[in-house]
Length: 429
Image 1: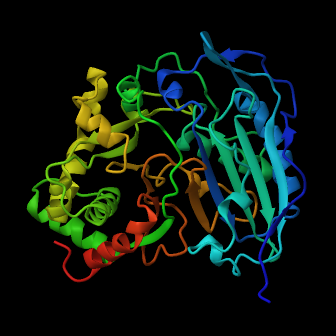
Image 2: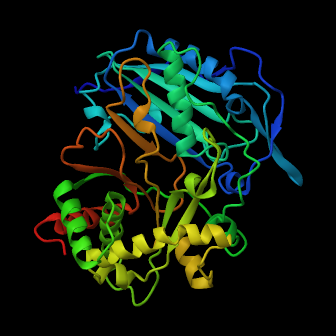
Image 3: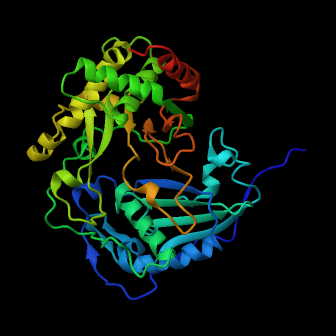
């Protein structure tokens, strides 16, 4: 009989509240917050370095951090005709301590194929976040080797990935003995302009679509540095005065490969790309602001253009869209004309939604045993094809750029991987 690896949770989630008094105030969400309200994401942080009693140590620091980040300990209130607000009630965040009967090496540091389901390493909402749910839930799982995994699930309406990283770094600083977080947190910034959101633009025309969970295939891939370097060099050679970023090269590879994999004959149909952009520097957000400060940028290309173009052309589509972001923010409008064809593509399988996790600070989380060996995302409810490139702290950083994608169905996953392999073999241009 083969040995079964598993996780034992100490109990159902308990509430961890602030260790001291906090203001009993309400915070009005921005339109950017509202566009993501009730969506949940999970961030997994895999730590090789040991920490004495990691679950209890982190729990105590979490309680102290909530004094400074007290909105996390509150709840959403309102709805049904009432204004939606964050009520800073101090009720607390969900917390679970757990143990695994194996080492991190046994489960290959959560590399695919997964030996332990990611759902066993985090607390989920079981669907869209409800007003009664904690705004954040954390699980600390200690492995037999002394390493541990911290799984953090949160309501995206309260904070984006950059803000979550700031909060977790603060918890880490308090764990390591600092008297207070090094960054003074700011949750409300009255000077922020309204940031145009694709979700708001689509809300009415997409109302007739039935949004349901889709069991996309789980893909954990590495984009080789040799490919990235080749694309960057070729882009600079062809497009004078412009440079290609790692994000653009990696996203172009995923976009083109999945477009080729899911349909060989597009006939002019759209295969849009939507990517998230952190716009703090563009809108002048205050230092320490941890609310949502992102926008979605759209590339409304046809499937034929993406599948049949060379990779430099695909990179240029992405780069041109990135460079339009300041203009769009200044005009407070998205450039796309939302017609029925685009709405249908954006709400279905032909679209790809990309959110880079690189450069937002998740690699700087340290609970006392050093920075993570790996950082990974997950969505409990998956309704559209998604991809998270540029993941920090991959154990394969020397080989290439780590990407986790839920962007193809099972029937297309083998072709998707084959298209990636073909792109990386020899001259990709």
